[in-house]
Structures are given as structure tokens and as C-alpha cells.
Image (cartoon, rainbow, N blue to C red; front, side):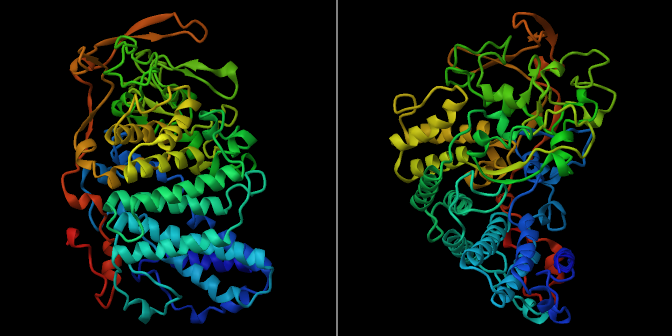
Length: 585
């Protein structure tokens, strides 16, 4: 029976990928669906088979390539979401189709049609129903976030029925997602980190998704959507934090171990992770964490995630001040006295590469032109994979040099964690009623874990001060976790941060008032694993002129804040009832 269940899921998945009809619909009358749903074990296998549709995958960080945080390599040219970054995407682009799809939604309604005929306990029924409601909420939310107005369906459709459903208003799409997540919150179990199964849904994960949904809608539409105001978002985040605290969740002791597979099973790490897409060493099939996030020096990594200078500059000095305002900032040694999260997640010249086996550590230096240095900023061995920005983001790299085979990475992707929940609350509460002690405390908890100074009404007295702080904190705490693209969208700052040229390493000098002075042509770089005082001077290629051009981001039109409906879906609407977003007509 279990093999038949998986076969049925595979059939539905294939149908879901079809573009022949715009709602991915197919007439299920020729499938004997009833044959596949006889026991609780069948339901369990079916629901578990749909978990991939309930969480973002490893492709989520790729949207950072369409923001100011991740550099595009000109020699690569075909990397993820390049057309979004360059403003050349259109209804026919494959990149904008990544969130469109009704296969999982249809499967959820197949489940609701069939589960009523299967005997099981109320606890199990609530778990499965809650999981399917979470799936529906999540799928509608990600489509709302990308396309805003999409068709809303509430049952398994025949081809003729599907062809008569137009796109619903964004208000109705969000309302459907909100209704479903509220149902999921009532149905999913309330569990501690020790009680839950890793990667499986709980009441807390549903409450966190709700807070995320409300935060996005409140900021993107400034409270214009009913039930999605800043106070609504603050209340949802506060309720999720209360549930988390009650169940023993909290901040882990180590920031970087949250993103290192060898440590993710530890109790201290698990208490921060609310939801994750789990990878395990014994079934390691995830190449991303051991390949795309790895420096070239390992011999198998391709250093896909190249941090921009813009990202590096967002990390404050250890006194809690921006680099242009801090007396601790030394442009000749620009990476000293900086927020520890910088050295933990980004390789810069002189940064020590800490691996699982300390005996294999080395000093990274993208400014060293030695022929053997594959991570040199101008390395010629393979222009497609070199560190063109001079910085490599290794946040999700396994750091396990014992698994040097492509495809053997085992770091799990973190979907939601306690630190993000704190920042959700701080942002929503600040926007709803201005900064208060709860806002400062939430931000300070996140910063304190990494050794950064606490914040208060003296350091950041106004709503505007706290807003800027939170937006920066979301970058340095959450970069690489698939958040930035949507933050830029909902804050309406695309023209400000994305519409500009992006250049390789360029280190700024500042005047006493914090204004820009000039660029450095050389910097001092640490060269020893054990002696911090051992340094050498290295030239920054084109550093004195502001770096080498990598790409020029384009964000010039209001339509870039909403994706077009995929043209394949429009074309497949044989009745013509599905219309393109007016901004893209």
C-alpha cells in the first residue's frame, strides 16, 4: 500500500508541473483515488510526501542575487535570478514562475476529500488537517507575495471548472491565507524543541508564519488590507514569542553553529530553530551547502554566494556604530573591530577559515595574487567561479572537509528561528506605536548573543532611528536566509538599494563628519593562524577608483515590486478569464 501511495503522490506531482492548464488542473475522475486512502498509514505517507511544498527550499537564498547583498559574477552570466537583478524579467521568464503552482493546493483538497473516510485518533486528525491548512496558507502567501492577485480555489476542480476561475483580489488571496493559518494554529500540536520531530510542523511554526504574513502585508500595503495592520502583526509576533518561551525555545549560544550541519542536532541549536528543511549525513544528497557556499580553495566548492561591499559595510563596529561614525573603524585594517557576525559568515582578506577539523583551518586572502590561490579576486583558472567581489559568503557551508564530494553536504536550511521572531516583533511594534522597552529588549537580545552592544532610548530615541536599526539588523542577522529580497519589496526601497552599479572590493575612508572621503588602494591583511599581529600589505585591484564593475542593478519601475503572472498560465487559460497584472500588460 505504501508504494502505491508514493506512486499516487508522484502522479499528482507530475500533474502539478504541467503547464497545459493555468491552474495545473487535470480531471482526476480516471484515477481511482479511493484505492489510495484506506488507512492512517496511507494518510501519513501522503501528508509527509507534501512537506516539500510547505517550506522554502535551498533555492530561497538565490533571490539574494536580485538584491544588494550578493554579487553577480559577470563571467557566469546565467546564474539564479539574473534577469530580476538586471530588470529584464518578463511574463515569459522562468525566474518569475518559481512561486506559481496549484499542484500542492489541489493535493491538499484531495486530502480533505479522502481523510473523512479514514479512521484515526483526533490528535492525528488534527495534526494532518493542521499540516494541510498550513500548506494552503503558505502556498497562497508566497503567491500573494510574488503576484498579489491570483485565483483562489477551495476544492478539487474539473478542467471546465478551473477554466472559469479568474484571479481574486490581493485582499481575498491574503484573507484565504490568513483563514487557513488560523485554522492550522488551532490544529497543530504545541511542542517543545525536544518533543517535536525535526522539520515537522508545530503550533509555533504556524504562529511564526502568521506573524511573517502579517508583517509583509502591513509593511507592503501600509495597513490597507483588512486584518493586516502593524498592530495585528505586532500582536501575532508577541503571541508567537509567548508560545516559544512557554515551550522552551530561545536563542542558541552560537550564531554560526545554527548554519553548520555538524552542530544543528545539538539541543542548544535546536532550541532556536522553529522550522527547518532537514538534511542528514546518512542521506546527504544536498550539494548546496558543501558546493555553492564553499570557497574554491577546498577544491570542490564554487563560491557562488559572493558578498557585496554593500553587505560588508552594513556590519557595525563593535561599539555599535556604523563604520562611518565609529572611532574604531580603521580603513587600513577595515575588518578589525567589527560585528562578530561578519567574520562568522563572510570570508574577507585575513579572515581565518574555521573548519570542523581545526587542523585544516587556513587564512583566506582574496587579495593574494599567488598562482596557487584559487580564491584570488582576479584568479584566471576559472573566471566563472572566482571571487570577483573579494568576499565569499560561507554562512551555510558545512565546513566539513571530510565530505569533499559534491552532493554530500548535510546542512539543513533554516526556515524560521527565534531571533527572526524577535526582530519581527520589534519591527511591527515600533511601527505600530513607536519604540518602547519591549522593542529595545527584543533587538538587544539578538545583538547580545553576538557580543554587540545593547540598544536603548539613548542610543536610538526615535521611531525612525529604531526603524533604521531594525532594517540593518535584519540584514546582518538574517542575510543568506532568503529574507532580503522580500524585505526590499515590502519596504519599498528597491530604487534606493538595487538601482545602482555593484563593484568589487572598495574600502572607504570617511571624513570626521562621516561623509565619504576616498577609497583605499591597499590594506593590511592578517597572514597567520596564530599571531594576530602578523600582517602584510596587499593591493586592492582597482580599489582606489571604487572597484571593478561586476553588474549594474536595475530597479526603475513600480511594476518591479510585483511579478507578472507567468505567460504560460495566461496562454493556457482557454476561456481567457485569467488576465495579466495591469502593470505588466
